[in-house]
Length: 148
Image (cartoon, rainbow, N blue to C red; front, side, top):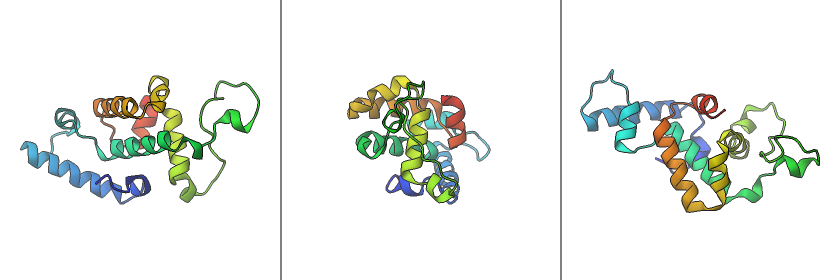
């Protein structure tokens, strides 16, 4: 299910897949259809679909850091957002849902103690996965609200 998720994980069809995944988890754990899956994801150590999208996108960003520019590369002003990734100004939804824009935006909302580990790929993946399993995000909006 994670194959190509960075390209389609932000589409409107991913909601259907998320609901199917929750139904499968309820069947596996033999719980009712009205029961919440938050604790089940944590017990089974499984990422929800939005968390899996965030994980795959952040791993892509950390491995391909050369594709992304930081704000310090764009201008010489010393600001508090100097080390965040630069988000190009665009109004096109197609660009905003793209890998480079979404990756930059999600990476910028990641907590700084996890960002620091992005140079060590193995440790970064491990800590990031633990963080995402612990929080079990059901949407990107939920991630943006919790990380800020």
